[in-house]
Image (cartoon, rainbow, N blue to C red):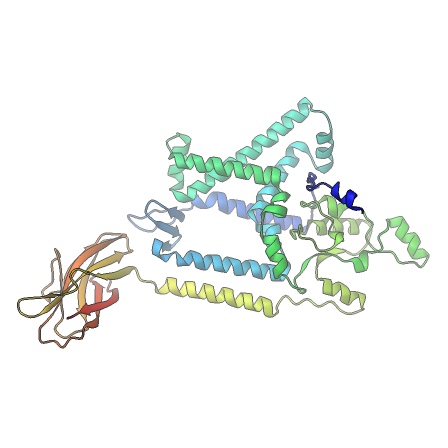
Length: 478
């Protein structure tokens, strides 16, 4: 190619519309099952109830922004426990890495929301416009009344699905039955309608129109996955050691009769027309492939019809193709150092989170030393420091906490505006699911030996449940 010819090439190649053909087989059935499961969870989970007792919401999964709480069945997460979300994100990353190490982009092919909703939209499209051939013919013809009503019905169905998708999303942020009633009567908060509108537009655009373009150009995971994969990961692979050279059934029979090589691939293009990404898997490993396995179903159907063994296309490795060409037995190493490391990391992070959940306190105590003044010398010679204590109650009922302080001989504590017991322990009542701040005065007798700064321990004890929480600060002396 000359320099002049190179300069005439366009800087942008317009994408061609992909018309995936329907196919049946084990991988397609698996995708249908996972699609139904994922959509059922997404749309119905907000309506699942979970009894947490009085004064608490009974929605199983709820992100209560108004009260700064996240509820997931029996788990309640406070804002200061955001590290649980960090842990979940870390675990999700390791699970993706593990899936990639086992079978490439199977997340993309089976569980990614873009794939799930695109499959749903394609199913709706086939209902109104037919399969691949019918859609291609209709798009190439002039508009007619039949085409108009079919496309209008399709797009209306797409918009309704997108609207329900946005509506289901906002139900995770408020009581679902109540919000549905408010939405229906136009009494819901304006922000709910705004977010439903945003998600309706994005779902309709991404699943209905952009489809494979999202996976090719917008999603970063294909690039990350390509950097993480190794030679032992199973990927959808055309077994060229068996398929090439390609020839029709009759040509292959004639070549074999002549003693010449002929592969099992009949070049029927079925693996291409069923691909939702519009690629030819026979061209080798490609960044666009989402490992959905639909080309495997299509190829197995053809192989069955012409009486040849299945899995000309299958989950395999390049190393195994080379082994078969050398007359060696294929080796599959799903369990290897890489997958064991990922499993170990998932177990460590998950175990740490479970341990933290099992041992976490339902109360908290924090202290802040007052700075002006740092200490006060009383008339009898004793020293006094002032502190602000904040007691946190994560339970749905009011709880009384007894305050004590230790660390120095003869040390005593007094809470401003709070009654004390006979043994001089201040009793602080904290309302359900809230915190309370009290100002306390800590006094040390004049004859107690003191350094300029000594560590003391504050303790808050629940008088009913017996839970004890502690925190430390410094007692300041001259």
